[in-house]
Amino acid sequence: MNLEELKKIREKAQKDVELRQKQARIRVVVGMGTSGIASGAREVLKTFVEEIGRRNLTDVVVTQTGEKGLASREPMVEVFEEGKPVVVYGSMDPERSKRVVVEHIVNGNPVSEYAIEVM
Amino acid sequence: MMDEIASHIMDIVANSLTAGAHNISVLIEKDNEGPLFILDIKDDGVGMDSETAKKVQDPFFSTKTGRKVGLGIPLLKGTAETTGGTFSLTSEPGRGTRIRVAFNAGHPDLPPLGNLKDTILVLAVGNPEVNFLFTYKDSSREFVLDTAEVKELLGGVPINHPEVISFLSKYLDEHL
Ligand SMILES: Nc1ncnc2c1ncn2[C@@H]1O[C@H](COP(=O)(O)OP(=O)(O)OP(=O)(O)O)[C@@H](O)[C@H]1O
Ligand code: FES
Ligand SMILES: [Mg+2]
Image (cartoon, rainbow over all chains, first blue to last red):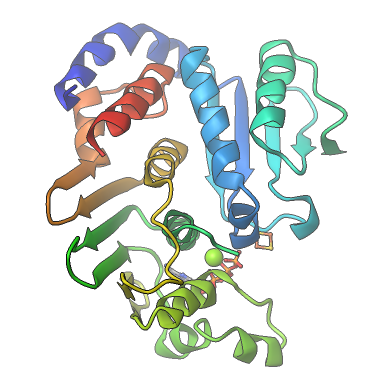
């Protein structure tokens, strides 16, 4: 495996990129302060990132923020979708993250069980 | 609280990101035989003046002045010092910050390196606008990942494109 293989991806993916040019349909932001990291935020971010890779969700972007959340509800994840309320999920872990990917991101139904705020 | 060196790295780099860094380098250097275990993280973020740089190393000081207490730096410094190692923070306003830690690799309280792969993967694709230079060296091998090079090879395709994520995940499994 060699980094040069990225050039193949570059040719294949150019089309999606034009589509995505406007803006991602959904933005997922994972809180990465010290207490977030200590309670497993990296595994949560990793789960979102890998699910998006695996399911080839070209219109979803996952990023991190250093902002502090509610220490007692960490790891926290915010999901931004155009024209919809922002959903804040708390006490996330890899299993919960997979469920949010399937139910919320793919099927459009926020997982109210894990939501701590809808703004 | 931090049970992996890789989590400390995630945390210290999170500070660099908050400081608006565009270029961040992370070096891990282990000597398999000797007691040397170096962690060196550099950024070109906003930096700190010398008084702030001193304060942030001491959580108690911050408490007394009534500021919100930061944990990331004191925790790493604590880990370094419990293992009989050293911690240094140098920073210059407007130029950037460098944190260099030497752990004593033989110390029983030294946490394991942990999942470096996940740390690198999520940093690289979770912050597409930042260039990261990751270097891991030990007596038998050296691994380097420069995300600026990855982006150049990708042309206009973003580093957080699903196919790139899957590629990088496999690439790290294979090479790191
Ligand atoms: N790389 C950096 N560049 C500029 N300022 C920094 C950097 N790292 C730390 N700081 C300053 O030091 C403070 C303390 O950092 P520390 O990681 O200990 O706590 P924190 O990030 O504020 O909170 P947390 O507990 O979530 O880590 C930060 O709030 C920031 O002002
Ligand atoms: S991330 Fe630091 S208080 Fe929650
Ligand atoms: Mg911090």
